[in-house]
Length: 259
Image (cartoon, rainbow, N blue to C red; front, side, top):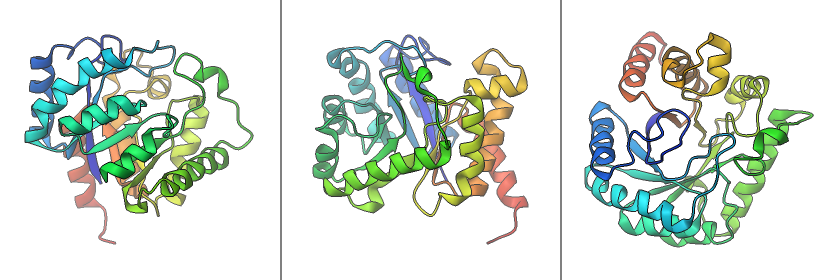
């Protein structure tokens, strides 16, 4: 399983907003994530936490492109964006993967990725960050989320993206209640015959389970999800705490019997 390290260059992300909104600080942190064992670093310039307001394309590009350009010589870089214009600028700056929380909703996104020949993460979300939690209503969350992801994968293939470049993300915490998140995590082993990313690091449902109100204190719960993702066969886990995740997975892998 590959570890995607989180690098938010935003003033308002739920866990680390404002910590890396200076280019030099962001690049130093991204290089540290590589040194800790991240297989790739995911640079995001727009907060998508519940209730977050959108930023302009120009502002998002100004935040992410200099960081992507500076980090790309040091290792694989992905860009966390739902806008094709931002994705195009990031790819030109050296990004190799697009992490799209909207599942490719921008009509220009999937054709862009197909032309670039890069990989894309298609995540499940309903609505917009400022409305999504009001849309967390399902009859069968696992069936509905994965049916929606299957539709997005079909659209990606129709746009010319090969199956091997499509990564699916059930969108833990995006238009989901804590109960929905847990159901999706329990359901993971049924879904990982395909390439799946799990992004649950420091999220609110972990705090609800452990009593930790501050996102930065949710390490243990985040590690538990990462270990479950590894056991379930996920291809990627997206985390804030790279070094701790690397160490936990090393021990877990040593304990588990070989397949």
